[in-house]
Structure formats: C-alpha cells, structure tokens
Amino acid sequence: MLSLALAGKPNAGKSTFYTAATMADVEVGNYPFTTIDPNRGVSYARTRCPCLDRDSRCDSDNCADGKRYVPLELYDVAGLVPGAHEGRGLGNQFLDELTDADAILHVVDAAGATDEEGEPVEVGEHDPVEDVDFIETELTRWLASIVERNWETVERQSRSPEFDIDDALTEMLTGVGATELDVARILRSVEYPEDPREWTAEHRRALAGDLRERTKPIVVVANKADIAPEGNVERLQEAADIVVPATANGELALRRGAEAGLVEYDPGDDGFSLDADVSDEQREGLESVRTVIEAYGGTGVQGAINTAVYEVLDRITAYPVENETHWTDSQGRMLPDAHLLREGSTPVDLAYAVHSDIGDGYLHAVDARDGRKIGDDHELDEGAVIKIVSTAN
Image (cartoon, rainbow, N blue to C red; front, side, top):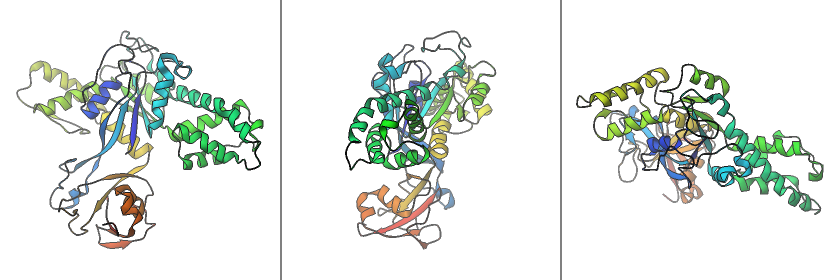
C-alpha cells in the first residue's frame, strides 16, 4: 500500500492533521514529543469514480456519490528538532521511521506560533519560512551520515576482483528505503569514480542529496492558514516548490460535524452546509474555516494528500473488474476495488497489484470502457476499468 509520512517540528499540527485524515483517536498535546511511536492509520486519496459514467453509482464503501476514496497508509512521526540527524530529540529513531514512506508531508506552522524548537510563542513571532528546508536538510544529512558510516565497508569490498561499485551502492541504499530502480537512476545522474577510495565527502553528500530527492519527495503543508498573519502563506508558497495551504483543525471540525450530522461535508469538498441546529459558537468557528476553503479551494488536508499521490508520486487509479459489461466482480458488485499504480503501469502491473497469483497467471486484458482487448504493454490512464483474464481467475 502507498505510504505517506507526516513530519515537522513539534506543535506544527501533525497529529491534528493525522486525526483529521484518518479519524483515529491519537494524543494531541501542546508540548514536544507528544508522539513517540509513530501513529499509523488508513487515509485516502480522492479521485473521480468511473461510476459517474454509468447510470447508477457503484457498490464500493469508499465511494460517496462519485467521489472515490482510495486507501493508503498515513503515519505521524514524532516532532523533529534541529540537529535530529545527530540524534537530538530522538532524531535518529524518527528519521529512520521515515524510510518507509513514499513521500513526506512536511507540516509547517504557517501562523508562526512555534519557534525553531517547536515551543509555543505568540502568533507571528516566528518566521515559518525559516522552517521550509528543515526536514529536507535533516533527512539529507542523516542519509549522508549513513553513507559515511558504511563507506569503509565499501572500500574493503572494493579489494575483491568481483567488486562492482553499482552493486555495492545498491546494497547499501536499499537499506534506507530506496528500490533497485531508484539506485540505478541515481547512479546514472551522478558522476562518481569507479574506485570508492577516490570518492570525496562531496561525492557522498551529492549521493545522499539525490537519494533524498528521488526517494523522499516533500510536500509542504502550510498549516494553521486560518490564523496565519497576512502574507505568511504567500511567502511560504514562494519559498518552496510545492506548498498546500491548510487548516487541520478546520478539517477535523468539519469531519466531526459531519459524523454528528450537523455538517454536510465530504473530505476534499470545496464547500459545506450547516444544519440549523448548529450553535452560534459552532457556526462562528466553522465559518472561519469557510474563509480558508474559499481562499484555497479546500481545507488542504485532502489537497495535500492528493498532491502527494497524483502530482508528486505520479500515481493513477485503476479498477479491476471481472465482468467488462457491467463493471462488476464475481459477486455482482460494481467497481468494488481500486488500486493506485505508478503512471505508465500496464494491465500486467494491475494484475500483480490485485494478487501475485493473478499476475503469474496473466493471459490478457480487456478495456471495460470499450470492450476491446488491450496489449500487455498498454499504458493505463487515470480511471481505467480493466478486466484481467488469468489462469488464477
């Protein structure tokens, strides 16, 4: 399952974001290291369900009138502080936990209400732009320290006649979350000596930087946008490549209001309606959330997840079916399952995503939208509905 990690300073709002995105009960506190062990739960990417192209809606529990929610893993890592790569604040433990993630959501306090150590201060007292490069820097330095610690082993291995530096680096880097394909691409992009004894510290730092960029892309979440001083969000957007303004508190209030039947709202909506029974205090609080939604097109919680999944990680959503006419499975349920695949994936990739036995027994596939047989190397598009014919069916 695709995995996203929440990271950032203490008190930036990571645990609130996590709760809003998963509706799981976690401890939320206004002090460093509220979270020690990472909270892990299921959240969802939101996309358009293909059932909107049919006369009736699908049978999936993860579809809300054509709004399809595709499950992924989300986990909240404890707050990191400057010097985490050197072990400050249990930093090595927390950085190590990020190696499982496909991408990182860096939650920044856009209100400037926490200092560089994550301690509460007055709103606007700290400049959040100073925090933008924090996670990237700590991760890169931590990865560089791992490369440095293992370099002596690589040099010893190089004395063997069978030594291959690409193989040695692949063995090292796959231990910190990189795939063999990631390593191959990194090594093609970096000029390095064949003899590891000729590598300099600059070579190793460059390798760590490329590794971080390729394997741990970062989306900055400008949280607390509802209380941020004027101009803070815009300056954050100028300081980083990908920034999503957000109010995790606002999203959580809407989700809880929807559960209580007081608010009509689905995650990722660009608006909401209130029940007449909402108290004046509740109405006032939720109307402040509406201001953020109107300014940025949503609360930013679903937007940040979608940005990571569909824009940064280049995923598509594909739907396997057994009946290409009715788009149903063997039990007659329409579009019950959805899978997040890499852009460029083929029907064979979808078969393996369903089950390894389906992939091993793959025979051919049919595009259920037009009923035509498609080639094994056919690249699937977002929203593809595919019948897989396999000996394991």
